[in-house]
Length: 227
Ligand code: BG6
Ligand code: MG
Image (cartoon, rainbow, N blue to C red; front, side, top):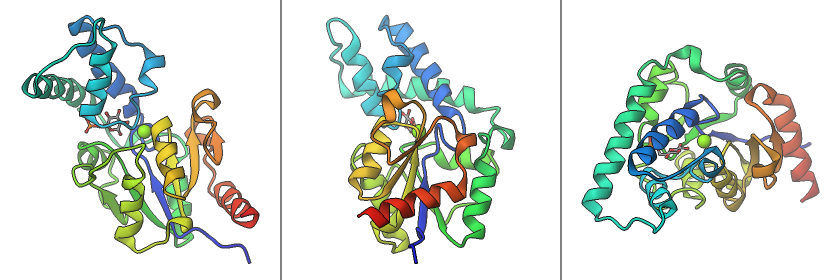
């Protein structure tokens, strides 16, 4: 009998809802103010990365790289977050990405636990706005995680909190750093996005509407049988 997974850990920004775009727009506004050029290609490496680490990577893009004090960096990160909060003001249940509601429903009907593994300190607020505040068995609080993605801690913390072995977990991610974190946790990784960035995922789909529960389980079991 093929083993079923016991937990599916969902990234939030870019998987459950399209806030990845709002993060980019908010960083772009800040970077423009600082005269630092950033584009969508560069933004791929910011996905899944904490607020402060993202700022550091943007400051390194300046020529010469900008060296700022902690206080100055906190001011800039706070400014970016204010831009971001403005953009997410209008988020409602309609902003859940295509296919996600059906996936969550099938996940729950199969008796498999669910968690959020997000790097965002805004995750609880966004889940509330989406009407998903009570949906997940566990939410990894970004503030509690010592090492952000690509370190596996975000994903292992979710499994540990629910007492589930890492090999019984699936993680779903749209970020390069996120897929790496899932792989390093020893979990089955599902990537959502472009092959150019996410070829290291165990199973890759190009958009959330292609996330079909039965197929994800089938791919998970296929890999288990091979190992
Ligand atoms: C991740 C996003 O989910 O959260 C990153 O992919 C973002 O782009 C990070 O920087 C931190 O988010 P926040 O909301 O705490 O600034
Ligand atoms: Mg993401």
